[in-house]
Length: 150
Image (cartoon, rainbow, N blue to C red):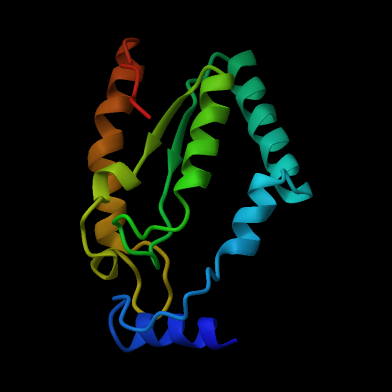
């Protein structure tokens, strides 16, 4: 509970800066379900495969946009890199491209890209995603989409 309270104080009082540190990883349970291939992860992966199959059957391009958690700092303290890696692996295994937006916001202030008090991406975050994604969609329309690095 103390770790959670300190995390919330950091988020709301100190603009997400790691001023207070409990020395406890409050993200451990969420990450463990991913690492242990928990039921929700298995369901998510199957839904991913189903979407890819559906698009392939209809000759529809499929690009995965991996969005970071906008409540996290976009630096080496970002807690969910392992999840980004796993989703990128799913894309590789299914022959689709993945656009990891964490690479494009690395080092930026996450507070400037989220809805205040909410944590979801704001208009600026969506605009940045659109700037990166639009040329890829254009290339798909031309029939020559480049392969994205993960």
